[in-house]
Length: 242
View 1 (cartoon, one colour):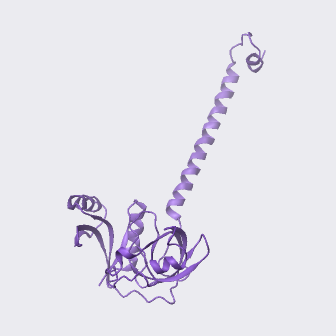
View 2: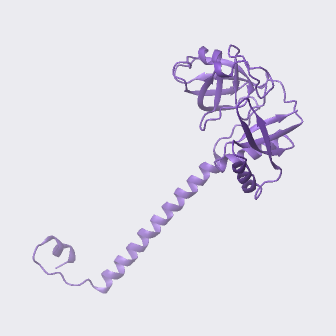
View 3: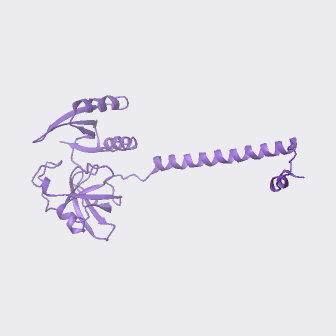
């Protein structure tokens, strides 16, 4: 009686498997294990390809498109100086972006309703993780973003209409801390891999912030640094230095 029939019949004692059956089962198990390992390798290769080959925004060339979550900022910042050293006017069609050159013109389309607005990048932000762009109040109102506060958007660079960057040097900010000790710890960690890491302190009306930044000689170098830091899970913000 075969082992399979024995298993289906209650109360019947099954004979031991023969050596041939054991060898056959062993070969089958080895083949199954090999197929499993091969499948795991394919999954790993696929995941690595996603990390290494994901679409990267080249920031300025015409036709570049980025998608992400947009938010907006208004009255609290109205009248304050922006990263471009302009005074923020919540009624102007402007926006904050962490990497696009200041002065860049972009079309922002609300993917929930198809409404679009053209804005000029004149500030840095958002400083909230997983946000792509911060719109002025006027820009947010134009695409019905004020009420919901956030929405998925498409950002299209208008390179022909945008002025070329005019800044001789750049830096990439990876953190801003109230605690000097925390800033020093991040600086020490980054210095294991990168050169030109420094801390600059910035005083507001109520607080002092210690900003950890990496120097970059060119726009391209700043973009490369920002990309590497992003892969490490750090939020990288490119600043133009006059």
